Image (cartoon, rainbow, N blue to C red; front, side, top):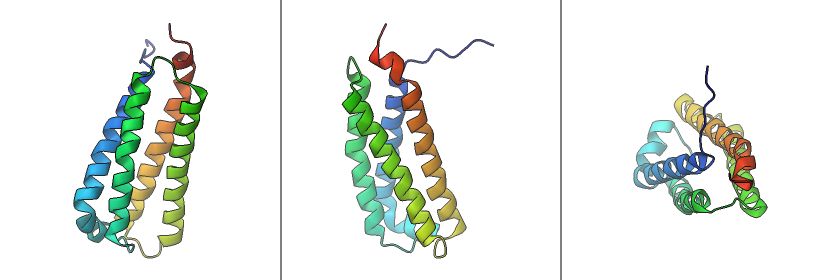
Amino acid sequence: MPALNLHPRLVYLADTAACLVLGAILIVAAPALTTLLGWTLPPALLIVLGVILLPWAAFNLMTARVPRLTPAILATHVTGDALWVAGSVALAAIHAGQMGQLGLFLLLGQAVAVAGMLLLKLAFARPFFNPA
């Protein structure tokens, strides 16, 4: 079976798209999502999280376009993604008793997705530092 030969920039472009879509959904549909997911915190928190995702999407796009990935850029991605995962897990742990099952599933599911994206960023970092 042939190995996939993906360009290291694809992970940042994928993260850009994911952040834009999720950010827009959180901003536009926060009140409805709060009800649907059994979220006990105010809808304003979802709006703030959506707004946070928009500059993060821009940072991902900028990263996808730089000629070389610097250690500072990679460290920012690692820190940002790790904090997002930790915050999501903390919210789930603290509010699990008040959240609906769907809300808990989606909160932890997106934490797993961000952790996977972080692992992909790390896996693709080496060729990005030394482009061919």
